[in-house]
Length: 103
Ligand SMILES: [Zn+2]
Image (cartoon, rainbow, N blue to C red):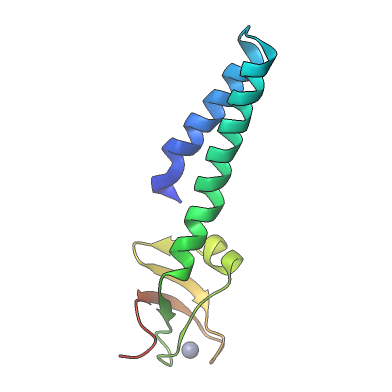
């Protein structure tokens, strides 16, 4: 989630400000809520959308599938390929992202 980090950092800065800078309680609560929503939206939902948009193609057998949320997030990735285990043949390969299930 490299490109999402600035938004997460901004959220963390807001949490820091809300905790350590003197301000009315209601403003603290608003800032914290805003920061948490921002962090969760970016860190979880954005990655979830990325994971759902398309399939990964196994380099071993050509099988195309949608990996699970955690499989996608925990797999090492380089550009649009991810190193994952194919559910069809069981091989671990660098799997290319494709947009459709068929050719
Ligand atoms: Zn395969």
